[in-house]
Structure formats: C-alpha cells, structure tokens
Amino acid sequence: MDIIDVVRILVHEPDYQLSFPFMGIDITDPFMDETGRFEVNPFSYYGQHFIESSFITEAQKLQELPCLACGGIGCNGSCAR
Image (cartoon, rainbow, N blue to C red):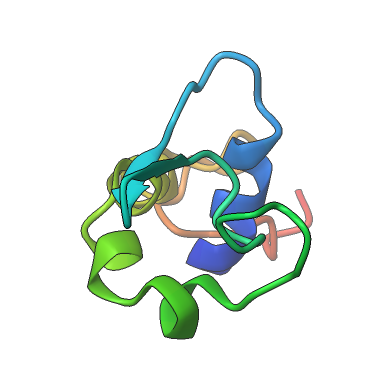
C-alpha cells in the first residue's frame, strides 16, 4: 500500500485525530485546501508542512506493521494468503 493510501485511511479514521498547522489553520484533511472546498495534492500544495506532519509519521509507522496474512513487513497484501 502506498503511503498516500495510508494517509487517506488515517483522514477518515476516528481513532486518529491528526492535523498540522498551515497559514494559521489546523489542517485535518490534507486532500482539501485550507478552506475545505477544493481537492489538492497534499505534497505539492502543503509541501514541507505536510511532509513533516503527523500524517506522514503515522502512515510510516503503519506501513512497518506486519501483514496480517503472511507476517511480512511492507507486504501490502500482495501475498494473497
């Protein structure tokens, strides 16, 4: 699973209350602009603010978890077990 896919999951996961500051606003959905009206690419729109955010650090931690099917790290479910 790509890191951006993991971030998409985290945005909608109620157990994670992630955000990062951008121009004085707490961004809770990095796929929307700061007004919440327009879809954006978080890497190009927010840049370092997004890259250094808890969204990325949490997604990286989750990517390091073993696959539930085969126990492999970073398997992304391609093992089909």
